[in-house]
Length: 178
Image 1 (tube, helix red, strand yellow):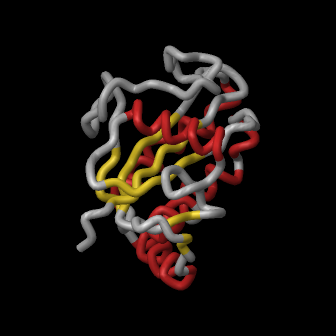
Image 2 (spheres, helix red, strand yellow):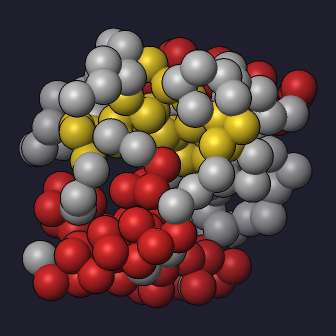
């Protein structure tokens, strides 16, 4: 097994306040989504959130400069996780309950000029502060081995990575049976 892990940070901002009825569909899917990711093939671990039951929080949760609410009162949902490979991330992100939520994303989240996610290879568990720095780096400098997205991804050696679409389909099918 490789010593490298793929870190994934996601960030979004609600159009309306978190507790607004317009976000009910998102909130209804939240626990189901978290249960699905916890069962997903290739997930190594995910950070929890300060004060919430579940996994430990990986440091103090901070937000990128793009947020309208730096205090994190629900206006800026974000995630931080570690994966075995990009195919596992892709399979989870674009299938099942998460894909259903993505299809409704415009109902809940602002369209920002920032990237919705950032990935990078790491040998250790990152914290929220590092994730935010990588996210801002991707926004400011574009994709590189230091910070990238799905469109232009890199392997642990810093070379462009081609996603194995057949493996993505296999993983998605396995996740769908879990």
